[in-house]
Length: 407
Image (cartoon, rainbow, N blue to C red; front, side):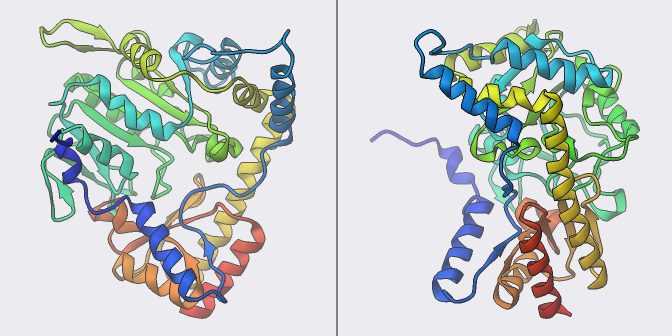
């Protein structure tokens, strides 16, 4: 009998969001007359921007005519989209990113999960806690960790993110090869300053490490002093790969489009110590395993950068940030300390009790779903994440229910 990849056996019992879904489904089945409001998983609720919808329709019409029909596109993405990304997301902020350093994909989750394939199995990991579970779990699957013990895996240098450091982990004394960072942060909503990112770039240079920088929520940054890309820090092109997404920016969670930036100068060593281009390796990986994002979806993504698209996308993020302000204010009235919600769509709440206990309490008493902080790591215990992704009406109703249940 063929053997499985035994690394999967080291994974904890279930994926966080699958566990939440099972609990909520069980509650809904047992209490059909008590409708649930979901402020847990970070899925958007508002329709796609009109500019994107128009572009999607137009591209679908093109696919209906022989003269404009398109089959397989370039695995790295169409030039029209890569050029717009380079111009608007990077050059406009003083960052040097070339269009051919951009790889269009069907999701930042996929990119963050798959990027580890191009690195050695013995790469030393530095990963924040709390953290988006995909960073940890995919490295467990790849065999870079030992078994779990006391909520953590052997073989990972965990970077504690707590209230004492503003949920921005400090540069460690120990070396690492791969460093995962996410700002604006999921789950805490914290945003690193330029100086804090510069310290990480310096660390990566000292240790010849690579930073994997997840910037999926950059569109929510409203403080002009805060960086929206790691490439705003001098020297970052030598040590960092950046991931971005149209999911939370323009509501593409069900449409699927994202991209990764892999600078051509970025290198790592092979077994003989010779430098190898990570850009070339990622291109080889993508052309082997990925056939590209569909043409209509890439046209819809390109519409984000039109005059109307930029205005509509900004309004969309502002809407969710408005929800976040309401949630922060409601938590303050309840005396619950929180972070995030100002330059990010997530509010990280210190609930003063075990995370799953508070999750169950909120579900039972208020029929509101949050995300237990301990599901993001040991440092998340005693916290929950509340998402601002929902309609204004649902958010206001959820907050009224929470106030009645906890007040």
